[in-house]
Image 1 (cartoon, rainbow, N blue to C red):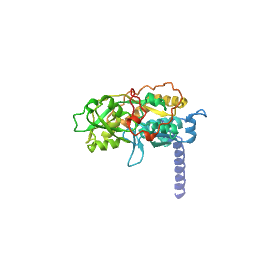
Image 2: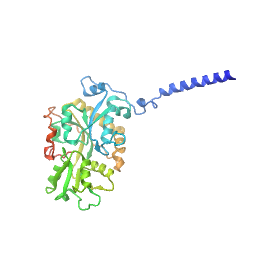
Image 3: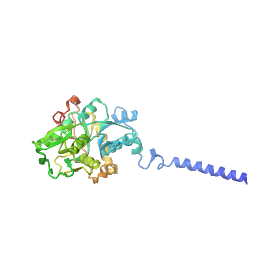
Image 4: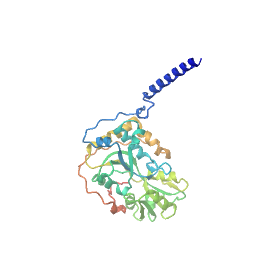
Length: 330
């Protein structure tokens, strides 16, 4: 009997090993060969994509303080949000595998509004995905792929404030936004009596100032404000009366046409295969925002000549930031 049992156990062990071997070949079991996995493409040797692939890391600048788009989770330390998911989609198109696998190869660097152009021109990052509005002035400094989303500038006030309902109601009020954007410039143009003397590097600082009563309103893109409200539902609300159009793009080195074409192609593919909508629903959608139709990418012509890198130390006020009066930015 003991010999028979030994034979049976041996047979069962062999069957288990065979099953395990078969399972390891199943494309839906291994993370790098999952159902949404992609083959790693081959790129021409002199392209940015080939350099990134060979390096094994995609360096991305993003925000660390913007819930829904780019936020460093205080518990896990992970960088989360829609901009982060867009970067992972790009990484998958470069490295192959699943989006989760490719996401492990993305190195995120905090990039506040005031230093975005300088960081690209210094080569500190491969690209910036950071609620980065495309406008003509910035096109003179860097190139853009996209847009991948279009927001609109709005106003956040205390939850019990019913006196501010539009941009013109900001006349005579203290208004806060961040340095390096032209949100305050837009307010100055449409509410010239507004007090825009208070600004910070981060929107969370503006939210703290609003909570403390130091300012009457915070203004920037509606989706950024929604993230702040999500963090402070009992304190703030968004007026829901946008007064600009903000097309978000992926910022890259001026004149890198091959990389820009690749990014635009990848965005269009993400629109088609549903990964863009999935990224939106898992981030911005958590604030109750329904995914819109993705915007058409703008394959504009570029001169290929970059202007000198801006001095980040000079961007301490809205007037010092790269901006175009006819083209609002965030």
